[in-house]
Structure formats: C-alpha cells, structure tokens
Image 1 (cartoon, helix red, strand yellow):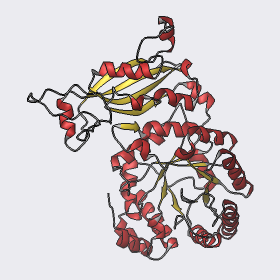
Image 2 (tube, helix red, strand yellow):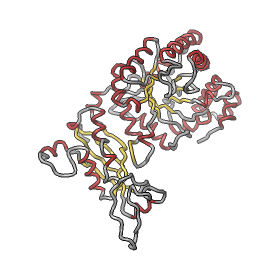
Image 3 (cartoon, one colour):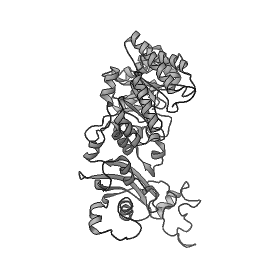
Image 4 (cartoon, helix red, strand yellow):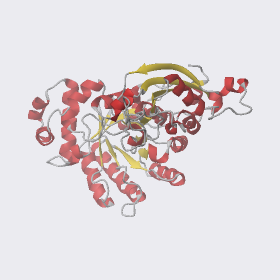
Length: 448
C-alpha cells in the first residue's frame, strides 16, 4: 500500500468476469461513469482513478443474489437450464436458488482496490463516499461487502482516536489487572431517578466496575438526563466515601450535535467519568466531532450495526466498521459476546474481539466490550478463547436476573471470572461462593 492510498478489500459476487466487476467498482467509485466522457484524460485517470490491486477467486458462497443484479439471459424454453429466475423475480434469492445461480456462472472473489488520497483527503465521511458510496447499488454485483480497510498515516494525523482506551479506563477505575465487569441498568427504560439510585447503590456496593444506561435510555420526560446524572453521581460519591471504590457510569448522551455536546458537559460538570454514544445513530463524523470536545471516555455502543453486518452478501464487515469507530474516537467498543442472544456465531464474535485489539496505525487502543446474554457460566470459555483479561464484560440479565438479586449477580460474575483466570473448575468455585452456585443452577454452566 502506498502512503498516499487507501486500500479497500471487498467480497464481490458477480455473473461477469471478476476482473470486469472489479473494474466497475474502481471506476464507479472514482473517475468513471457508464460511458466515456470529455475531459477524462489519461493524465486525470492516472492521478485519480482507483486501481484494482488484486483479485482472488473464492469458492461459491451460497449467498442469494442482491435484487436487480445483472444475470445472463435466461436460456430459451426447452433448453438446459431453462427457467432460471432473473434477479428480482419471485424465484430470485429463494432457498435453493443459489445452486441455480452458480450453474448460471456466478463467481465470488476477494478484491482489493486502491483509492488515491488525493480523491478525498483524510476525511471519514468522504472516505466512506469513496469505498462504499454507490457501489452497493451496482447492477454488475450480485453481492458486495466491504471487508477491511488499510489506511495511510494522514488519517492518524487528522484523527487522534481514543483518549483513554484500555489503560486509561483501568487507571480511572483503579483496576490495573483482571477482567472489568459491568452491567446495564435494567429494566432498560421506565425507572424513575430515585429507583435508579437504589439500583446503582446496590451494584456499586457489590463491587461492580462499570454501569451504563441502556441504548434506549436517552433524555426522556420520565427520567431526564440531568436528573439521572445528579442522582447517579451523588450516589456513586456516597458509595466511594464508604467503600473507597467508585464504579464508572456511562451516561447515554446520544442526541443531535448541539445537545450531545451539552450532555457531555453536563456529565463532566457533575463529576461523571464516562459517556456513551450509539455510534451508528450519530455517525462516525459526529463521534469524531465529539472526541475533539470530550474530556471523558467514550463508550461506543454498536446499536444498529446489524444493518451493515448481518447479510453476508451485503454491507460493511465489523472489521472495517470497527476501524472507523476507533479512528473516530471510541474508547470502548461493543463486540457482542460468546453464546449471545443475537445472530453472530462465536467465531464471528472472536474475530470482532481480535479486530478491536489489533493495533491500528500504530495505536488506537480500544477496550472490547462483550455483552448480550452473558452469564457466569461463560467465563471459562470466554477467557480460554480470547486469551486476555483486557475485556469489559457486561451482564444485564445475568446480573439483574440472579435469584438473590443484582448484588449476588455481581458476586457470581466476579467469582466465575476469578475461577476462569486461575484455572479453577466452576463447580469447585461454586462450593465456596453460594451466589455462583445459584447463578449456575439458573443460567447453566458453560453454554458455549
């Protein structure tokens, strides 16, 4: 990769020759259009046209076609293969249609395309215009997914990235080692501030490291952000005075830009130590804008990421998405967790954790956040497969749903992770910690 280029890696599926489809992507996303035009000189193309770096043909994926994909003309009635549906027709993309698609000549490939930095400069929104932009709509493509991005040094000069990351978060929490354990306020919405106070008190006194608003909790009339901030910070100060420990609480400040900045200032002025932003709901540009003004760790929530990642033949892979979120300044980033309640497999989750932990442009340290259906029984396998304690593990129902209450849920999670990192069998640890025994009886042991 040149120091003046961005290289984007795509999964492409097409009925055209792969080389032709790759050139269509490069042309559409740089100098080209559907026909030759005046002033598109060889000199202009040499400087500004995206170029195909490499093409690796892959085995068939089995993915259905995207609607409207260009396909070969259907054979005449009575000839072999007659009756294959065209993309967008009632049979296209239906179960079993992938085999017919491959018979009709669909190929798959990993394609790398280089975009000159002269086209857009070190700018996140304009980078996305280049590497994503209109390409998801091209008829030449039966499938298109942005897998990864290689970014040059000018992006590091423009975007400072996380202020705190793993080490800064540990310093604020005074937890230099060990997994960080957290939870989400449950119920997600509906608690008035004084009931929230009781929840926070119980969790903080039980030794939780981290508490956060649910992504559904913004600034509603029944529990305005200003009231929540006042109640929570007051209660955390009282607990800290009694116990010497103060959990981090991530207030959801997601909002329009002017309100988001004011929300941050409100939290900071009250002595809060973390803010949460739903990355997709405000966009990478707004996250970077906040980062420039932010004095607190930014907990990056991934709400709505499935729009980009869930369909295997379309969208933006988490690996590429997470790089953009880290570049924009997320100190913590949700990756999902093992044996989760959503669609991702454990292998996909582990790949996401690895992506967040992999250095970017020499730095951009971000803390992976494991969540969704997490319980004490998952601790040993999670530790074995991630091989790190540089994790923030959030258990919502796994703590609040404990038979003896949230405090016992915190105790059970702490005991489970202590056992996991020391190599102690969970059942043996449960004999010492009744709260862990109760949790294993309710939620089960290793569910992976």
